[in-house]
Length: 361
Image 1 (tube, rainbow, N blue to C red):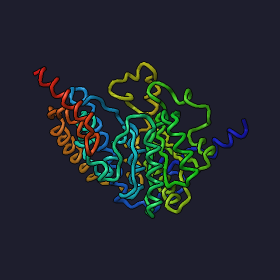
Image 2: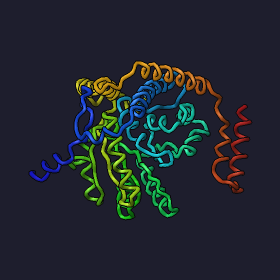
Image 3: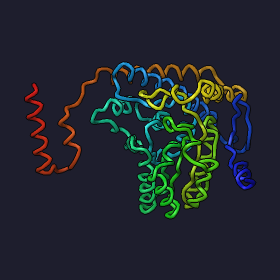
């Protein structure tokens, strides 16, 4: 028991901004952050939340098949993404709207994926971001493979696998972490621990003191960070990136945060968690915290809020214009995306379906 307590103390989440906005922790981790970057972080978090709301609205109006809200996790996503170079590759799961915005991926491109059109995902790879991964944890293996390939090509890029706490229960993630450690792959495993794997709490997913503790078993550093502290998330990811670029291999980062909304728009979180729990985390809101920090440190400007609101309104309008009642592609296009040179069997199947559809009028 003593060893576990000591390990927990050593892995207390890194925090640079207290919930009330007061600067805390190691001042050297804050000192080099330009004011322009701070403003960009705040603005992007605000836009992320506004767009998240619009995506939910569109789903409720029947325009999207599904949507997983990232409300409450803006700091974890934006803080991580701003710490990376534009040529570092992101391997997202399905809740990384904040990271997508940092990379300049348009809301329309994200919306196309959730609408189920054939071009969902186009516009991602041009920004060094893999397409959204719905299967839990599979993108972790892709991230490791890409990291190993980059090293073989003589590149100094780093890959980031975004996973949730639930994904750490999947075999793919275990295999990815083990392979990355053995190969010293320049990869970061960024776990957004939002406390719930759909309806299963973290306490029922594992017996380790924390997700970060698992890094010991793989032979890589493990770090815990306050996932509602954008500045701390940026600092911790920067350190892991520097380590990976220098050839010292992967890092496991656990960003401790909370999913304020449902798992997806088809979920009802009131069936498995209490209102009191949600209220506690609501008081730790990452956007309110970051604004308070800017005000306390004398770097707040009213124009920041104005820019954020204008950008939010513009992007919400662009998203709605692109998605609302957009035409559905022909189901026959499914066959066009399988092989560069379709096989005879595939062409036969396509023709069979075309006749079926024509017969239905």
